[in-house]
Length: 245
Image 1: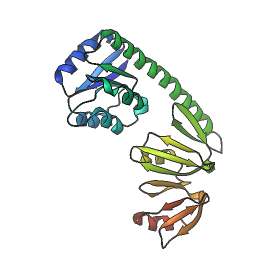
Image 2: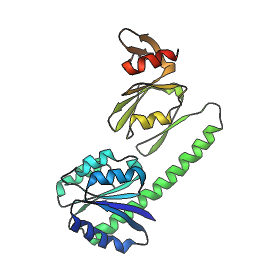
Image 3: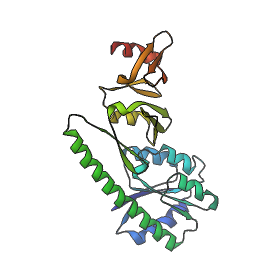
Image 4: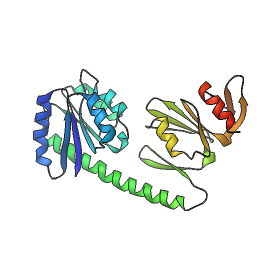
């Protein structure tokens, strides 16, 4: 059963969509509705859902701002509903599974529900594969690091990774071969995936591979990696960083 929420600043729009979604009660359950997107974000912190029906034009926060603040949004099917047709391309760029124009057509809604179910069927198989791989790699002495990006699993050795750089709700992984991997996760979440014996958060915006350090410029507060990347060390972290040696 798909568990969903509705986020729309108009109560009548919520009632109308809820009534329409009752036709799919054997496949989808509306567990909560919100007229304030900020309240919805607080709810999501402790209540994971499978699907969000989301309005775009809301006074407290627009729908795209809302999406940028949702954690683990790669695991949530987001269906955008709006009275304005100019948001279609932007909806796709924000990886919404579908885009519905108000008043919502019944056939369009049926198609959206099909896409939501398809999204989660694919996600289930993907997560199952990820779990199997993690169990397998955990049994070997040379553990690989597994990252999810662009709908695929990426397997990396520790030495493949130079550092990770934060950009708000996104993180870029810099690799030794010059490639970059953009992930829709905050740096804190990436840090939890990386083995602490090899990686250290040297700055609010950077996690480095300790094995890639070539120089530490103590007076300037920078480390130089073997790749010649120059990474700042925050004042708060400098003392703890020196204690590692």
